[in-house]
Length: 179
Image (cartoon, rainbow, N blue to C red; front, side, top):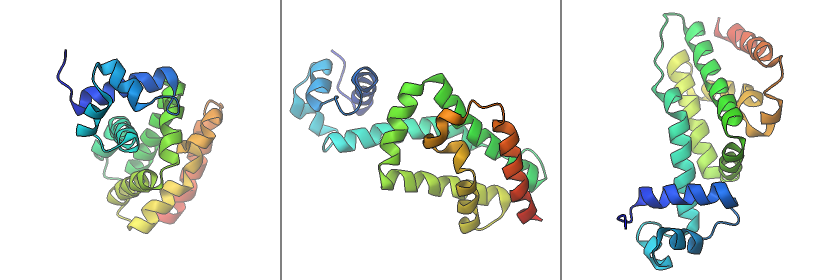
């Protein structure tokens, strides 16, 4: 039997959530699948909510890593901001297209957790601020402006042929403010 670790618990929980959904996955299911008693999970997580939050954060961090590690490759602030925003929105789109079920499960959970979504939006706004030289308030406004391209609510529309054209049009509006 493998040693019970947080990572192992998260991996098994993710597998069960994929099979059953978040609402139907219980701590008893997780413990049973791991071959441990239910109380053994409490050595690693306070409760089911903390376990699910940790799992959602892990997914968010893994899927956002390229966004936050991205480095400018041009001397042009406009080009750099454009490239990063395009990477941002296409990474969300690709996540949705590659595994809709998990994308929907995680994003629904995250969108319904104010603390998680505020933290993520803050990190995104900070990255925009770093790239553009604008303050955090403006960074946040830019992220908000691109809501259509990254908010899961609109995911079913991301396959439209006008997606990139719409992105470019919105970006041109932003560029007017950067001059």
